[in-house]
Length: 429
Image 1 (cartoon, rainbow, N blue to C red):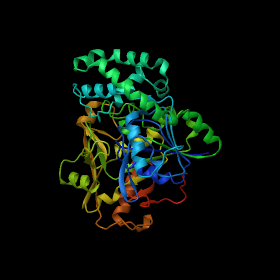
Image 2: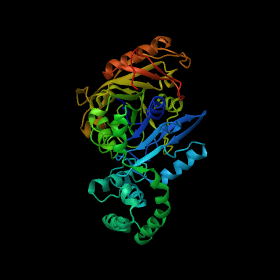
Image 3: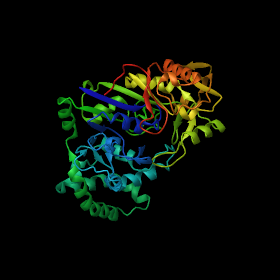
Image 4: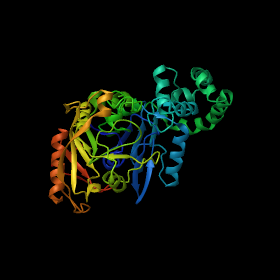
């Protein structure tokens, strides 16, 4: 059995899409296990960048099977647009894309509720795509799953039940509930025809593939610090991007995961609201934003940028059981004379080397920094760790020690081939 789980170790946008695309070359199946179209992977295909939001990155390879697991929430309209976009690029999904019948559906009222909720007292900074409300309905047991959406007999009763739960909120916001229901039922007729060929029991499909010794790649959406349980709550997503989420979100047991690879950016970024201890508000932060093209693949929002936070990454290594790390965007740090690394937090005279659960500490802590010399040399032509500039090597070795996990791979550019193994003997798929 060969299975690999790829996940983000920070607040997302670490470059997971490109990493999944790289390892998908050797995989037979690529499985997405959580999140919705609030996530985005920017990929380079035939020298052109484009973003995927729901469909796993492996779809770019003709002979790969791509699965959307039961832990994902699916906006069917968005999925259809994505399929049509891929077809326009001559990338066929027929017979290769499969969607769990137990995945929950994002419907228009979820998007309306999301927008109203973001006007509340606590601004989370969501994408406004209805992901949180869809997961909330799932937890309240009033959600509509893919299989429910396909079945005529029960659909309207389930829809009425879900809408009645939101009647007061939506009516107060001026929503015509009768028209909303009518529009959903009208759109459903065409969307069912589109959706039906993709639907199956993906958990069973994965199990059968494992028994046949197929190579399976599991991919998360958002980063570990956006995890509902282990992230910077309440400024988190509504699902579990961490490794444990792959078991519930793909319908597999923990013994089916051979290895966990954490993707870590050479600096830190965050989109939306929430604590960010190492955030930069100066020209260095703007330099990183421009060098790294730090703008959201889903929303286009500028990402907040800051120095590498070892407290965050060490936390992710522990909660995910990460055995290897892949470092991305080291090339974007070229030209910075002095590089800072956050090794701990300080609040009211106390030093924290492990990530705190307290909202107060997360919000008000100051970073404890150590400084290292930067590098000026280009790394665009490197073939091994030995080819790196001395200061770049030292930076990687220091990050590795602070993170308490080996940095076994390095990505030094947006293209698939700009990824190398820097540790001998590490074979993940």
